[in-house]
Length: 137
Length: 408
Ligand SMILES: Cc1ncc(COP(=O)(O)O)c(C=O)c1O
View 1 (cartoon, rainbow over the protein chains, first blue to last red):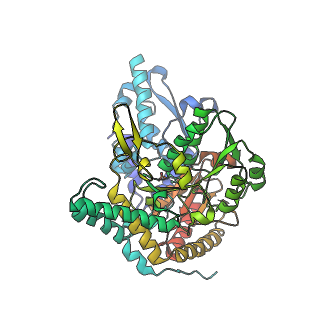
View 2 (cartoon, protein in one colour; view 1 turned 90 degrees about the vertical axis):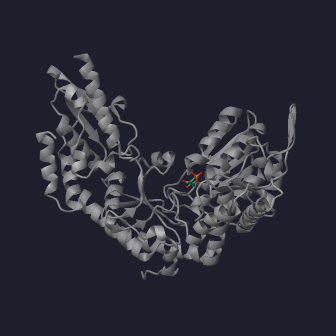
View 3 (cartoon, each protein chain N blue to C red; view 1 turned 45 degrees about the vertical axis):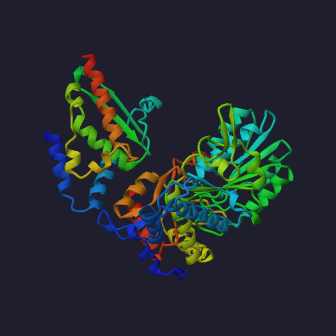
């Protein structure tokens, strides 16, 4: 696990019940930087989620930069966690990222492709961007 | 208001699945409009069939096949009684509501032509909408839609104005899965019949919660799913009046549905077999008949009154939650509470309730046009069954209050 992921795990270790954990996710969701409305397009919308999720990436100087948004606050919190792990990292690295922290903080159950929250689709879309940019550099 | 469980809590003992914990809390199952849990007697009936009577039906002269056929046809008679249909052959086995709609919509391809019209309500589950769109596309018939009023009831004045001699079929549900609205089926049917149109009613949400008498309603077709009325999945019923079932062509071809088969062509079996190609879901029929008997033992009227009482109780109590907004507030409602918390996505509310062991449905409930009508992404839906208790609903209200505090 990367130091950033370890930070997230330590952060979540502080909470001893689900409510505190979700309070934290909600707070992270509220703090996620606004996405440029110009990028909230149909093309950047991730399918397969009950809530809407937009994800957009650029890759200046070989480092990925993601922006994202969702109409559901818990989903925004989950996106915020994922982005913390992949933000400003080389595309080839992100393409191989196993997101091990999700298991450690007990969010893996949300990763199942049949869960309507689309966490799995978000992970897939992040890797898709990473692979596309890695191929271009 | 004084909360009352009109049904004994010993009913819960018949549903072992409800006695489990989810995320460390006792399960509160309020997603009954999606599917209900099955009582032990239904599980036993299915198990017993496979253990002792399993054989193919209508085929063998051997004793086992006779036994399977007898139970299978007795199940059909049980469902005839359940609906008070005039004839046992008017009860067709299907996989569920969806197959019932498709069977009729497919059959009407031979009866419609350009210039004809179909009237469909905008309160429908996608399964009572998409097959009619396909029918309209295939035949060139026109689709006309009955609009919704703000309270979630169908605009009856608009309905009356949509009806004329070009309308060949009218389709709507008995009770809405998204909003709980109970539609005036008998009245709407009489109006459709006055212009010569056939009437198809989606009863998926009505059969589990009330007494349905197809002769009294005078509908031409009535479809529902076994899994929503305490029976197994993969099993449903389509009721059709004899004269209509005789007019409609078969839906699928195969074994069991034929009379004579020659290479040049075949003649079809009589009702109901004309519509039942292939080996049917025998265990499903037997389980569904047991579910029907179980409902009668508990009492159809008692179930309805129990759920009505709980619906009123929960609705009144939820009103105390800050920022709650209800969808579907028609005077005549059953078993469904659809709501949102202002400023919160239904998905967020559903996620938090799940953490508390409370199972509700969030989203569009397969009724996108209704959500579009209200301009919302979806709702949180709590839906009731015979085994729902005051305690379940207290847990719901508590949970929604907690979720509101966390999200707003
Ligand atoms: C009103 C209504 N119609 C149709 C259906 C479809 O039922 P099934 O999926 O069992 O065919 C449902 C179930 O979700 C329903 O609630």
